[in-house]
Length: 319
Image (cartoon, rainbow, N blue to C red; front, side, top):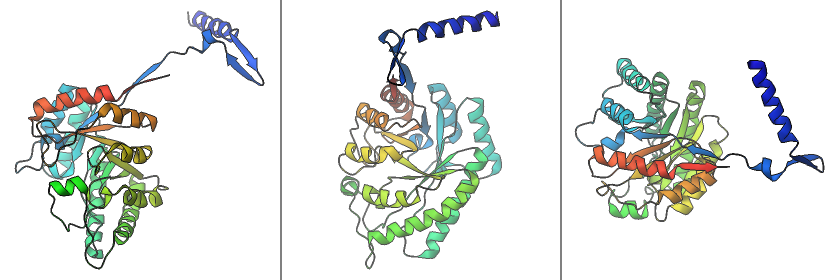
């Protein structure tokens, strides 16, 4: 039966070849052969544990997020480092096993650090923190770690800040100083990440990175490292987001997609995910979309609604 199947396949290919013509030095298919079937691609979608806990006093258990993610139909779970109950190997292994048993990946570990600080000792401390988190990622089988640039912290984080992103440097310093510190800090972290086989994805996460020119000024000198990546957050753009998204989408390693059901905890944005989906498709992005539901609505209803929106926006038909 195997020989017969092979023979039938050869006959079919021969028949198709008969529908081809030579144009110059190349074979060109006739219309009846050129109509190849279209392929539907659905980008994998994870949910950030942050979607269930917005830095409230009581942490929402990551175990419950993993259970919910599997029931709802997500492909993975993004772990927020600050939400972890502890950093013990036992706890890390527990979360990893829970995800495995439910068919979920753990694509991203989101951590916090800042290199926007004139004090070299403080910047070194955040490099050491990043190294610790890279080791956690390795232990848990997480391939990517979210990185921040940090901020000057010279203005209050209020509605005006999230609207215009203006944050003047500390007296006696410039944004270029901060860019240089970020590059230096990231270079040290990348040395560690390269050995560990972990990608460090720098995010447009307010502060210095609210300015896309600054973000790219940090990213591009580091892009030659095999461990350098970019985490694009759809909700962290100052002003009109789409033109800025188009600028950084080609560099995206992973995309965090925000929703604000019930009104945002910090700010609101009306995001057109169909438009965002087209921008990412044009940029040939094929990685993970990670939901960050940042609204005040109960995540038990807001998270499933968000997944439905993202599934529609990030399901493409390709020729």
